Length: 64
Image 1: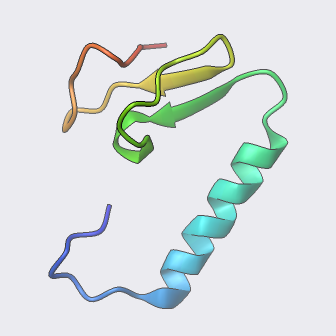
Image 2 (image 1 turned 90 degrees about the vertical axis):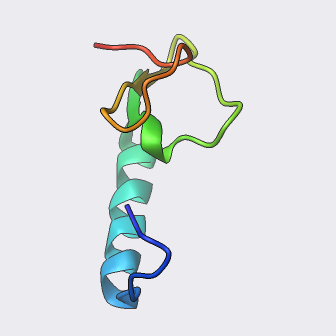
């Protein structure tokens, strides 16, 4: 996760975006996403599983 004052490496950021795109587009039945990457207001569905992270423990997440 990026820190605001940390300098952004555009090449690494593009690589991570591409990896996320591949993961999302290849998911067939279920997608497991760390809670830290999910925008506020998004809730779990039968196909979308939000995984708890140590940084963000809230009631909207699920564990696998």
